[in-house]
Structure formats: structure tokens, C-alpha cells
Image 1 (cartoon, rainbow, N blue to C red):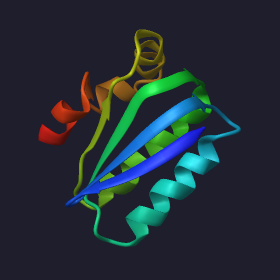
Image 2: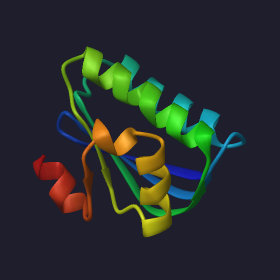
Image 3: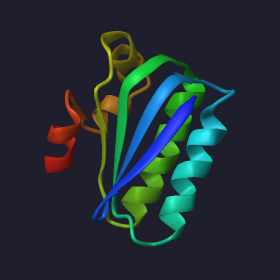
Image 4: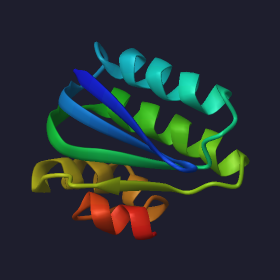
Length: 110
């Protein structure tokens, strides 16, 4: 799993590449939490365009960061998820609470 962090004012864009599973969820968690602890991030955008696989650990880590961001009054948006990843997000109930959009540029507007 590769995690790229990009700051756009009060938004944190997290671009993921590879598999988001029980082996890599901690990498994602640590990277995002380090930025959230700085106190300058309000919204979180998770770009899943290059995620090839995700399991329940991925759902859990995304849900945990959603709760952190929501507690600070921010929003979380997921973008670029392939059809098979979207299906996992829907089965896990994530799509009911976190907007799923096609492009990162659209996520920046939410």
C-alpha cells in the first residue's frame, strides 16, 4: 500500500495505491491521524482510484477516520473507487454515510 498525502487548504487528499487490507490499514490510519492531529485539516478526501483490493479492515479504517473528521465538523468523501471496490463499500454500509464520487475534482467541491 502506498499512501500519498496532499493538502489543499483545510482539505486532506489521501491517494491510495495497492491493497487496503489488514496488512496495510495501519499505514493508512497512521498517515491520516498524523495530519489530523496537527489541527489544520477539516475535510478528508480518500482517492481510491488505484486501490486493487479492499477487505473489512479497509472499511474499518475508513469508518474510523470518518468519525474523527466528523467529530471536528468536517466531511469525508471517497472518489475514484472501481466498481468492485464500490460494491464492498456498499455492502459495508459506507456508501450510506460517506459520499462516493467519480473524480477527485468533484470531491473537492463537496
